Length: 583
Image (cartoon, rainbow, N blue to C red; front, side, top):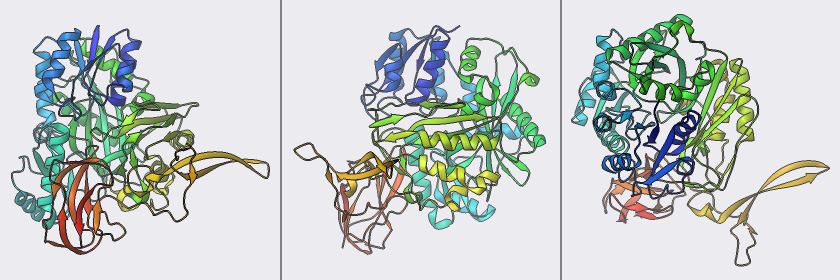
């Protein structure tokens, strides 16, 4: 068995891996950036080493720094988690060339499947059809236009070396191709270290179904069951469940067998996920993620298998002691991702900041995989996943109701989270009936009833929430009061009822009509789209801000002429900083 594992990642996945290692008696090594010096994964590890730097490129994507720490720590294995280097062939080879075990597939399998274009070709050779698309990387936006005219709009531009919705842009027509292509390249480079993209057809109402596979180095490849990940926004998953609702068993078996074919076609070993789009009784190969998935816990709860444990055992050379017919799937599991985002009005604006309180739910069938505790800070430089809440119950509706109860018990203060949106999703008739699709959250659901908690930058920063317990006619009730910041005497003062409303943000942000345009959150300017003297319309994009690995368009709040641009690409800005003036 392995002796000491370095986890080349951060947040909840690093914590998740460490917990299984501890149960198996394996020592753990954490790495951390300057911003993560006191992070939970650092506190839980047996040893921890500084990478230096703040951004991902300066720290968790610094290959030489990680290799040096492997040598210093004496780690005999590396677990890459997900994101960062988890699907990077060069990193895997750099590990294995030093005689250190890479807890994942062979570099050759990552090379085939980590590149989404070559993975499409491999799937075709294995007899598994993919979504129609180009099998070459894009060189120019005109290629997107040509593809759209041939196959119809909309089309999807996707990162060739990534997944999880990062670096993916949907293009509705020729006029959007250039901006979408540039944005996809920027996001892909920022998150995966590679800017290459490709284009494929964008299905009209698909479900996102993925199949968990597990393979050892002795020729055994199994499919463990599917996960439905159709509840998404901006092509990133919000809710995942297993098994999929309204999913015929013959399709389940055929998809599982197809996943095994794809895995064997690239010589896959370890845990992996083959993703499909399912529509009108047909399924299409989408991609293979050559790593553990964020949503792996739902498979663990229905199969009773610890996937991280089997990753470690397979990496150590052990053979799987069970076969396909031994795999059992019992009950139903649902997972929600708790992201530091403000879902008010359906905008899902990133919400970096410090968690002032975190009280997890409890009770039968409830599990929380979190990477933060009270007092920890969510940085703008990294992914905004706080953790995952997972429940298990004997059937789907009981699991859904259990999740709603668990959400109700969960307390997270200091940053806005996606929990209110999850309640809307799980309470929708479409979700209850299992008739939702990947486009459903953004095109159908109504989030207008979700209001901002008043956390973050902007004019509402002066307000502080205080939860007060009171008795009304003998009944105990909880009342939320919004108070002004504490004064010199340390006492919070009631906020004026005339306090200005919070500005509305994200995806073409339009505010109150002020000509002074400020950014809604801390981040980095990646593009300035206008020039001084240019006429603009209300809502037109002025700058693009990257925060928490997501791009956010900041638009003009009124029509007029741009009289000042106060930032340039690469500038770091804080919430409320003025970036342009329109008069």
